[in-house]
Amino acid sequence: MELLLLISIVLVLYTYLGYGLVVWALIRLRPRRPAAAPASDEFTPDVTLIVPAYNELGCLAAKVTNSLGQVYPREHIQHLFVTEGSTDGSDNYLQTFYADSVTILGGTERRGKVAAMNRAMQQIKTPIVIFTDANTQLNPEAVRNIVRHFSDPNVGAVAGEKRIQTTDSDSAAGSGEGIYWKYESQLKKWDAELHTIVGAAGELFAVRTELYEAVPPDTILDDFMISLLIAKRGYRVAYAPDAYALERPSFSIIDEQKRKIRIAAGGFQSMARLTSLLNPFRHGWLAFEYVSHRVMRWAVTPLCLPLIFLLSLGLVLRDGWQPVWTMLLAAQLLFYGAAWLGYGLEKRQLRWKPTFIPFYFTFMNVCALAGLVRYLRGNQSGTWEKVRRAEAVDVLTH
Image: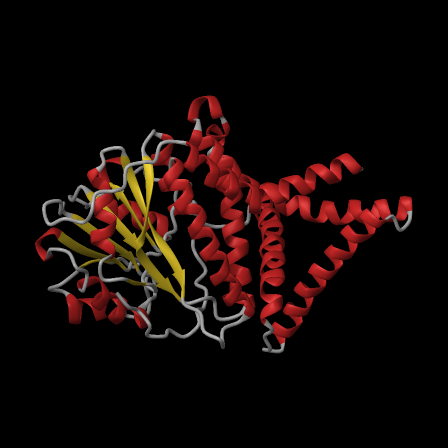
């Protein structure tokens, strides 16, 4: 019991603290990777900005304005809005007001985001394509700052940074999501400096058109799979934190729960389809980063946490109130008690900041376990159930 407890604790600590420290140390021991070339008017390849927009009528005006406002030569950028299956009048709206500015790819049948993306890619003629969600706002230099990384022929894809717009009135889940993405963004910076990031966020990422590999229509995490398939072929997935997409947090804890469970189910689906990346002899640094940053977080830590609690309780019951086991059990009870308090306050629309991290950490791992159950049951489709977002706030700056 003691050995199993120690192993479980080490795995959890490595996942959330140790891995970051190891990567931080490695990038200081190895020769520094040359910085990406600065944005330049001499490197402005043709790009297509693809916006999947299923029933996003309420976001379209802001998104079109934001897209057309990108600081990039107009003659070198095309805008493609994919409204396939929309029933809210998105097609008519775009055709009426923006037909001269953007290309609209519509259709009456809803086959899912992945099928729509695969269909859109068949029409792309530009060497670079950038994907961005309809409910996000990009900083004006996003396209320029992403494109500059492609001056390196070893870069096959580039991920922008996802930023969560939070306010004091947002839910604890939303505030926790904002903290989590700041932590995740730092890890991505280190991953990219060591070798490559392991999985782009769909809010903003770009690929070389020739390297795009169509994924099955039932794929849940299309952004993750598309970028990892490119990395699997030996190309780097670079990170561009100066190209960012702003998104509001989920409207409520229920909305965030739906989103997290679906992402977790998609994580297990992706791991089942990317088993070859577990081989360090074939994929080297990519395998190390993939296992440490993704597999550990999705498939190992969520199982270790309840095991640590049960083993701690078992040791206290077996050995009595020994100081080490007692303090370990008490620390967990205090942490999960704070998480439960945060959950209770959230249901009453009350927020207390000291509970945000315990609540979101616990919430995230419980959703991961629920996602595993959903994946094993096989009842997850590739069609997204749209999640409500908190009201937009106009804070986008250069």
